[in-house]
Amino acid sequence: MSSGGYTHGGVIVGPQVSPEMGKKVRARAIAHAVELARVSKANKLSIWLHPLSETSLQAIWGVNPLLEHGFSDTSTHVWIVDLRESLDLLWSRLSTNVVRDIKKARSAGYRVERCSVTTEFKSLLDLHERTYARNSLPPRPLGMLSPLPEVLEPSGNFGLWRCVSAEGEVVGYHGATLFGTTGYYHIGCCLDEHLRQGINPLLFWTAMEELKRAGYRWYDLGVAVPFGEGKALSLSEFKRKFGAVVHRSFSGNLAIEVAKQPQGEFAEQATPSAANPGGIGQPIGAASNLRRVLSRYTQWRNR
Image (cartoon, rainbow, N blue to C red; front, side):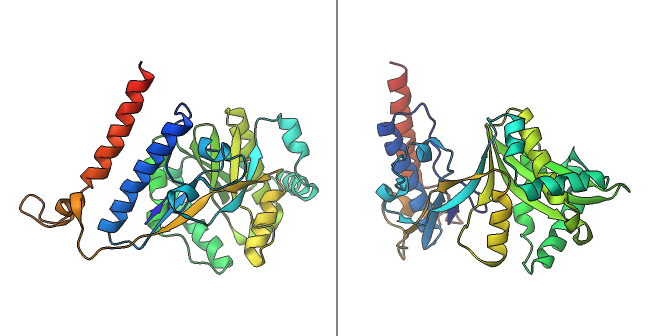
């Protein structure tokens, strides 16, 4: 069982919460997740913490905050662009190759424009499948992409840009999830025959520029693997060329001991009964404990 799935998840604690109370809230939330994993018969709980979350930023010594909750450290690194800088400075930090490709694409008549993932979804899926086939990779499951038009775009948490050729053909897409003041590169794809015309750098730069103008402060470009190999290394190097810097991305795994029969306060929730014939439900005990901690924090704030 994982918190976040394809992207970051984890326990999110507001910046107004004191470090002491934050640890208690995280501990209760993790305990609740552990019991959910046991009831679901999962053998492992995985959690990712975003590198720009308060929890990660407060870890000034680089020690994974999940260690104190019993998790093994599986942390990685990500490329992040600081959009707080001026557009001129952001442009100056692009590599020579990226600048050359952007100018090449513009000279050839390519343009990038914001679009709706709802109306472009079928075309996006088609280009996504072609791009992954080109790289000998299986496409992402539809269940990972269908929330884009169904949930994230209606809530204002997704942005999509398309690249259009001089002839009016849509030849590429660049998509980002948007939360708070941070954008997260989520999906990118293009037609093979236009790949060498510089359209990917043009898509990336246009998204960065528009996010900057919209007030976003950071753009997370995804996993950094400076010492990787093959496609993973080339993709990591491509992202670095946009002036991105490496940030630590905390994550961890916790082995779950699955009992043959649920015990204690969770037994009622997982065991079939007349009131609960499927034996499915939320573990009440951990949820109640979490609400109790939050209630105490609210009372403390209102003193």
